[in-house]
Amino acid sequence: MMNPTQTGMLLQKASDFDGRNLTQTMVDSWCEALRDYVTVEDAKRAVVDFYGDPKWSEGSRRPWIMPADVNARVKRIRETRSIDESRMQQLLEPCELKADEAWLARRKLLANLRDGLSESQAVSNAVEQSRGYQITAKPEKPRKQKQYHFAGRIDKMTLNDVIGAGK
Image (cartoon, rainbow, N blue to C red; front, side, top):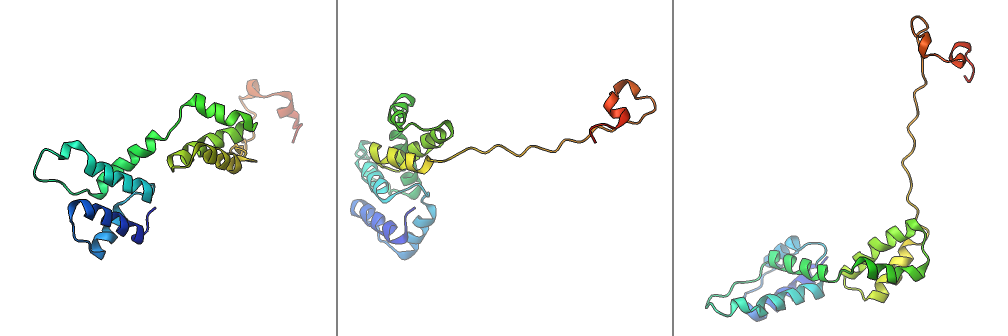
């Protein structure tokens, strides 16, 4: 998540391309509109990619980049950092994780890669965060004890029900 200072630096970068005048209100609005997953490095790359896109070279009127454009481009940047299942298996196999730990490590590995960490950093962080993790089962619901009315239900009763054994 970007703070107002970082957002101001991002808007200054955009201003270098489009000449917009920056205000504190603009910075605050951008802070509200940028998603939590947007980092400074990814946002700067999104701004440069936006203004470097050849589709804007033909017209005389050039659009300004908006927070939605940054969010969308950063999302695409993060998706390119994902790895396939076989590569994930190769990275995590030497770590000798238990099943529950491996499940969490896979999730953390993907998140770390999308956040921009290198493969080695992402693996070490994921393994460290998943060591000792165990998925807990939901507690068992208490079972209602069978109670039969004696008259007319003798066919459903067992000998234990009749003599009261097991209570």
